[in-house]
Length: 186
Image (cartoon, rainbow, N blue to C red; front, side, top):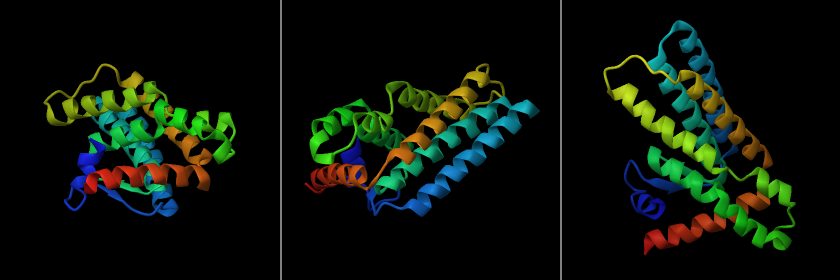
């Protein structure tokens, strides 16, 4: 999915490689925080469908924050989730640990930047829920408390990952991005 999205990079909805951008990353995480506040306000007002939508966008904006931090721009929601899973899922931590001596990073730092499967599942589930409430006709959603808790946990985890990333880790991920980009070029 990631390579195909990179192949569409010249089109509107592709995955583009760019330079890591701390300014844009910080802007996305601020927007995620804003969406968490909106989510809470909408919950108090009883707008359950929009609670789901704002929870999703809080999670999505935090994911975008992480992508821009490592030098990627995504215009496709499913690709964004796939990129998170690919670069920060449990597989990448194994590769980092394999290069442990080269990177001179502590194992706990590597574990801190690993996004466990439960967080990836949160994002996939809320994506589907957001599509259901946004494009459907129901204004009720029964699991808003769970959605809100998961959104807060997800954004907090992304914030922790952002804080743990350093230049060496970003450089390592950048090499992996370049390998995928070479595949996309054929």
